[in-house]
Amino acid sequence: MDRTKDRAVQRSTANEKCEAFRVPSYLREVRRAGEMRSISSAVLLKRSIKIRRENTVKIVVCIKQVPDTKGGVKFNPDGTLDRAAMLTIMNPDDKAGLEAALRLKDQYGAEVTVLTMGLPKAEEVLREAMAMGADKGILVTDRVLGGADTWATSQTLAGAIRNLDYDLIITGRQAIDGDTAQVGPQISEHLGIPVISYAQKIEVEGDSVIVERQFDDRYHVLKAKMPCLITALAELNEPRYMTPGGIFDAYKADITVWGRADLKDVEDSNLGLKGSPTQIAKASDKVRKGAGEKVNLDPAASVDYIVEKLKAKHVI
Image (cartoon, rainbow, N blue to C red):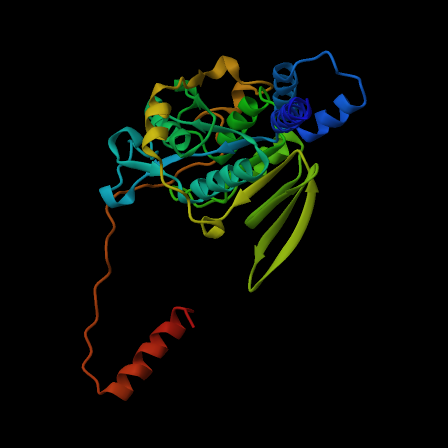
């Protein structure tokens, strides 16, 4: 009789341990209060997953497919880059921003959406981002958007982002095909949200972000409530590699494609080449080198000569 009681106690203890393993702690407290005694563990688990999804930080990362200058640069007759004829890569600063978003996802369970504007072939950079770990990819492409400068590009991206739910937007500081560092801050201005640029470290604290912003030989620590926009430096981190499984999943996934009609609250006068106030005076893919100068001096005189030349060029 005592053995039977002991076995019953053991089974009861084992069931309690299994139950404790299956049900999250905050839901166990509710169950102990007697409010959910009739609900199964499976239902509780589904509800806990739903709660987590509702509380997930939503991050939009703007990335750009840029020319790989190792393969040469080509221009169209109007002075714009002939992107279809060049080898391409993901912009380095944008890749660092993507890695920062993926690390926040690893730490807090964020949902990461990557957004790019460009030719249909820009889908490649979205799939690369998804192979690294991004959840969704959106391509904004339309002939009327071609030839956009920073103003028209930021208007386009802001019009696309207005269709999304977001807590945090991350962009690269600048693109290697323009080096203007304007698009990120312009997007924040169009959306009416705060911007923190030159981020070298990003953390989430409740409904706020804490960012270390690079500044000369020091850094600033800034805190802003979400939603906000952050521009990332390439030095922010070391981006991860794509995984084999991630590559397969990325190329099976659907990419959302939007055009001009999908942009929200953007006027035609602010889009494409016609909506770009920047005017290109001249562009060339041939760089002419100046004539060299050969000197034959002793070591000390050579040093003095080089120093004077550098001073004349205001290098030192």
